[in-house]
Amino acid sequence: MPERQIVTGLNPTTSLHRWQSLRSELLFIFDASVPAGGQETVGHREGEFSAWLLRRGSVQMWADGESAVARQGEWLICFGAKIRQKFSPDAEILSLRVLQSWPDGTALYSGSPVSVFRAADHPQVEKSAARLLRGVDQMVLADSTAMDPRFAFLWKTQFDFASYLRYECNLLTWLGALGKALQAVGRSVALPGEVDARIAKACQVIDSVPVGDPFPERTLTRTTGLSLGRLNKLFNQTYGWSVHAHWEKRRLNRARLALEQPDVRVKEVAAQLGFLQLSHFSAWFKRSAGASPRAYRQQMESSGDRERR
Image (cartoon, rainbow, N blue to C red; front, side, top):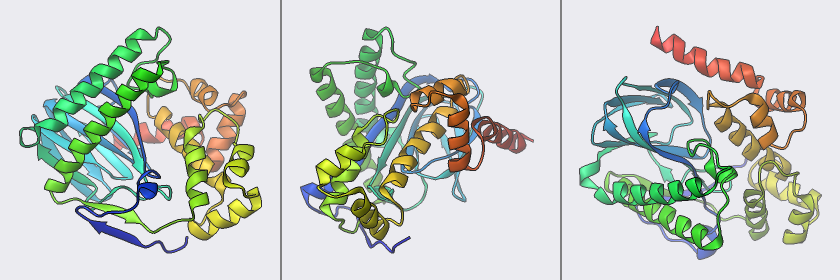
């Protein structure tokens, strides 16, 4: 993979164009007891982080070789790629999972994979999260076809433009409050090196297309003014992979997220990613992740079982 220059600092500055290439998307949010099957699990993530406010009980997190414990009244923020979590039986949490990264997958914040801080020291993080949750709950309740908000509510919930703007404002307000708290505990912001503006446009197109849609080749070539071959060359020079591989990485991350939900059937995951045949989805996932969907889910469960022993 090509070497990428990354600038870090507590408050680095860059152009509006570069900030707009930062992807920030809420994957789920809930405020309740830890869901059944989630007390002790392992997982793999790319470009995502979890934020948990312990309402009750405690949690121990292992992430990328480091560990941390959070107790009642504390936030735990995890940026790790390879993680394992163990909640106490009585744990209740305000939980948010966010996809936030630069187009090459670089996380916004550098430093340790886990941060813990007292909620009372940064009250705006909890207040803005509660406001975000109320807005999400209203949208989900208004849509009778919506799924449980713990499982990617954005894929199913239907809402109008005004509701979308309120949601975006609430999300950005929470991210801003969280950012201030993280900087207060010593986390730096990471800015990767400049990229060709056409690559940034291509990444924006890919991020805007539903994961169940076909690869948007025509939209990419029309938006960037480049042939697919030229786009692939630029992506390989910049990131070390093709534009289609960039698309597949996004779909694979969504598939992993879905498979982490024990009550979601593999067939449902396949349908959400646009596969008409379960066998085709299984073959694609095994080729991409190195294990079949069922084997991947069993690995997550058995890893948790081994840790319990």
